[in-house]
Image (cartoon, rainbow, N blue to C red; front, side, top):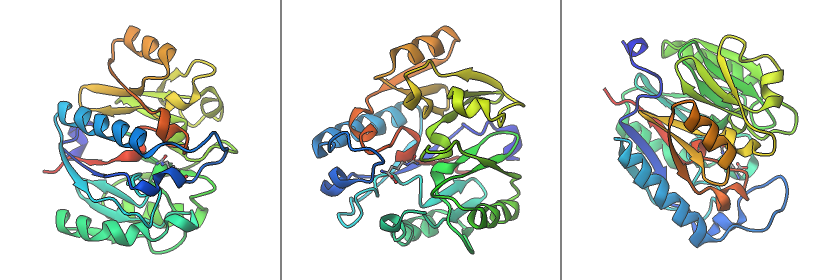
Length: 264
Ligand code: CIR
């Protein structure tokens, strides 16, 4: 049933309003704090772009106790067939799952719990061939395998792959452009994980642009990456540039700010 619908066909998303504490979000390198107003503006534009792309947006309230809770992609995974509550691999983010669980139980008939290990939604790329789960500092092998068995229960085939050393999440370095094509950094493409796909490689120096987001007819791309935008434009994609300067300071991109699915 879902196989005939593109995996980037969505009519529903969940987002969470950024808290004031977002300025203290986790980051690997300190490039200065983002401002709350800046993150909020980027988030507001993201919500507007989602609505323009034709999806219904559920906006959850800010959680001051969790600086990174605006990145709802990490504590859960959602599909038409059901939701999976994950266990984020960062200490300060683990309790975000309990915060989002009641909303998912309201919206989905089937909600599974990751039985063991750690896994972040940012490490999961859904493609028409499989659901790819990247091992990373946040997603361990136990979590990846447990997630694969949850996906099997939802009728989805999983594939456990590697994330390049030092890269936060698998999807930090890639996104799906259409049913056959991925956008990837050169370093991730070199690992060979996308051999079965057409690959569009990010221009050198614009690596954070790899976390783009295909939603229905458009591809959302960080507006700080003009060469990537021009490349995708030339390839015929309908690009929607969105500012990610502030969330980029806390290692986030466009996929991180939503949970997306097609509600049948
Ligand atoms: C973190 O380190 O968890 C956040 N500062 C960024 C999370 C980005 N999420 C994602 O790529 N899915």
